[in-house]
Amino acid sequence: MALDCQTCGACCVNLPSNQAEGFTTWVEIEPDARLLTRRDLVRKLVTYDADGVPHLRISADGRCLALRGAIGGRVRCDAYHDRPAPCRRVQPGDGWCLRYRREHGLDPAR
Ligand code: SF4
Ligand code: SF4
Image (cartoon, rainbow, N blue to C red; front, top):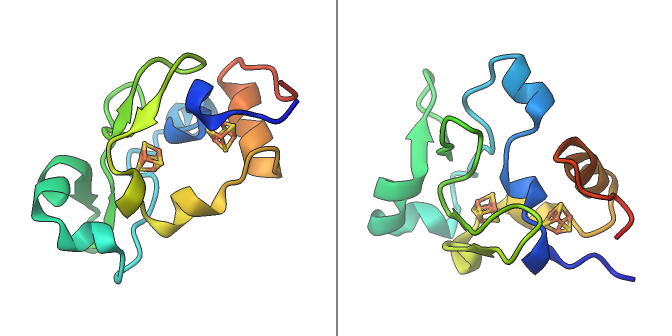
């Protein structure tokens, strides 16, 4: 059975192993991302690192602030049509997907 992103959301939460290592910036946003032209979304979803590079903002528990719903339940992305390139790169069933699912306690295969 194909993996269904709308009942997953695991790759929209920082990996527990990253959090354990203290990473607070997470998905980097490419300079020409459409997201960066949306002032409303920038205000809510973007943070800048010490070098001024934009990243998706995450909550203390590692969730991207655009993610709605509970991991493994019904989820959606509030910025889906404007999400940055790294969000588009992860594909259901690829290596990153399976790693995220495994680390967040979801069966990698279903
Ligand atoms: S971890 Fe995989 S199945 Fe889950 S939302 Fe991301 S790409 Fe989709
Ligand atoms: S912007 Fe959307 S797709 Fe990207 S990590 Fe956040 S919730 Fe997931």
